[in-house]
Length: 406
Ligand code: CTP
Image (cartoon, rainbow, N blue to C red):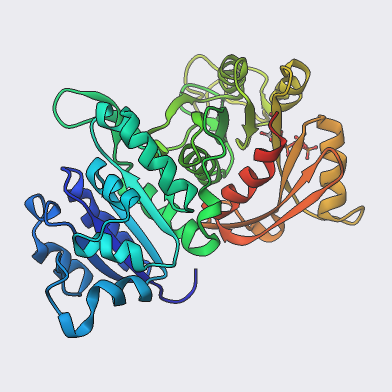
């Protein structure tokens, strides 16, 4: 997003409060003005000086400081976005009750902008009916309440309750800033989603491969946004060196054959399969068992290629009832036809339900932070997703997928 927005970062009193400092940095690095409003409990974990130094703004927790400024009203009124990270069980309860017993809850009552709660707590507290009802109440009123990530909690415990990584929180918050709370609606709750991402590598010998320029970032964004919208996500990752988004389960693969096996196995009981990976169409016909040396008898003067299986087409033939299969197409226009004409033909050829079309004329998209796409559907409809972050494009893709799920 261009331009500077005013973000309130609320921090409540859980041990994950230390991660709020990194969320704050991610916001200021994007050029936004950030006002941190901790609860008194949060300051047991991170000192006010840390938040003041990183935000360049004063930090108070109560409504009795800066009285002439009427801070408890102004801060909420002036905000373009409020993010509460971490949101403890107690904070969620007080917000759901509409209390105003500290500066953060007062701010929540005066903010008319989108609000994102990022819960972090022990699994028992998260699953308790009281917390679940508070979450439902806040969502019904239009706030985003992200599901907690699954993973290591404080001490030896592990389960849902972990604060997602600051980079994930920041990326998702930016989607809400640009597109509003609806972009992270919990509409994929209970759905199982399989996403392939990255680019396959087809070995020539033990050290060399044929590869492609896919960075995996669009698949990562799809996984991050799907998890934020409540889905259980499996990410089949072909050669992507990025941390798992939102703590989702990743299955690392190398070649197209490995990707095919992993995707077909994971797809069996899933609601949606998204083939965002750049799968090599060809692989070397033979793979040398030892490194090909120059000048040796084995030095090749050409590489013979054979076709790889088309995973997307196979998914279509094997798809279960109600299962949605989504393909990607990186297309360029040529003398015969424009990008969308080629893409419509590909959609028909592959037989998938949706095809996300990227125009890659002139080297666009690969490795870049931003993207733009058109989602073509088998029923003939086309949804244009304007240029935006890959997370924003991901949210647009899930907007098309969500209503098509049975
Ligand atoms: N794909 C696949 N298996 C392959 C090749 C591609 O599953 N062996 C999937 C990709 O993940 C993507 C879609 O198919 O979702 C489109 O890939 P693309 O390579 O553009 O399609 P092709 O059928 O190879 O089209 P073209 O005729 O342009 O080569």
